[in-house]
Length: 107
Image 1 (cartoon, rainbow, N blue to C red):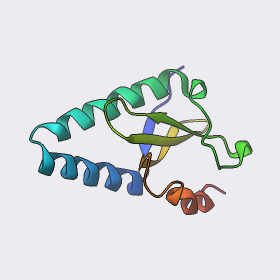
Image 2 (cartoon, one colour):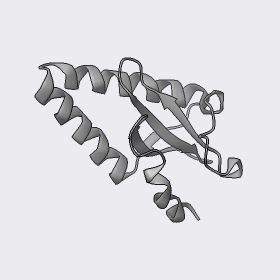
Image 3 (tube, rainbow, N blue to C red):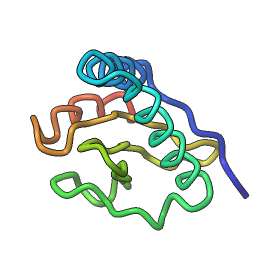
């Protein structure tokens, strides 16, 4: 069964900021980024548990990530009973795990 994918507001804002940054540096790249995110979220809804747990986060929380192709970004998510919740669209090389402060809202 495929589950719907829902972006937290912070993750949505991160995606919008990343798209704006890429577009300002190279015309048309925001569309490529959005396509990469759409492909990643399609892979999530078809098998979220195939993706690795995020290192540095307690495994029991079940926080996983899928890296984007062509971009140094990852979609950080948790699979819940009724949906897949995207917690962050995070750069893979800058400020690792900055989004962990958001995990308090999961409890």
